[in-house]
Length: 325
Image 1 (cartoon, one colour):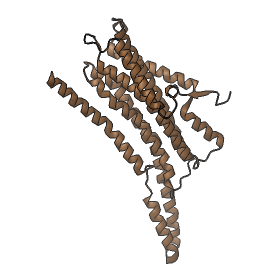
Image 2: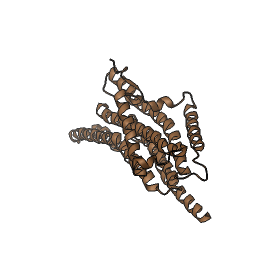
Image 3: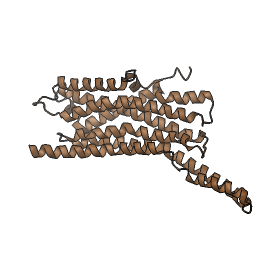
Image 4: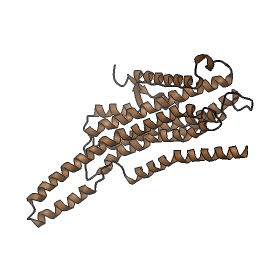
């Protein structure tokens, strides 16, 4: 069986509608469906017990967010790969396979990721309710919604994280295949772009967690597993492609400076031949050791301030509500 036949697109990508506004429409549709489900289940009724309307909004928001954002990040990762292609030592078949792997995975990978998401959901559900009988102590539409909505969140988030980490590992491997041109370092920013945009999905997810801190007695138990999991994955997504690229750039600069130093030593007494070497050495010394440009740094800085602002906003809102009551 061919490699193409053994892989298929990640199902998160299949959910997103095509077209220029497909991601926006998909997000609005998911949000509407989830909020409608919770409303029909009675989650927002004043006399609903053992539920938290803010938590319901969290589940709806996170699902409406992760599908279109994962679709966007996948497209941007493909563009970063295309930027890098001209500098890779590989044949056309390998390049096609690597690019296809950005959005397609094997059936085994799909199954393992879904199983891991279900396992994480089951463990978190038991952590919240303590025992299986307590989970089903009350069987009504509201309890069903609050038990199974997190399942969709866990499976979707694990699938997205697994896809992003797999792509980060791909770019990590590509470092050894990349021809580093220190006079054209812009090609290396593909690694920085992938690291920055891959963290976007999890930064946005963490920005939604304050919804779980409002009007719930189990805020820590409800939010901590997901918060720690996304935080660890966010660090991994940033480090995996960046550190090998950084080491490769540093090694290339060191080797080039040593080569220039040899020429300078041999031409030390020939001023007319020495000056070009000195100018070239200054150019190499000015090359950044990191695969970033100002745009990537600005974007990453903007991403990183989003969660603290939402956490601060949630704290202020919580204090305001307590004083009003």
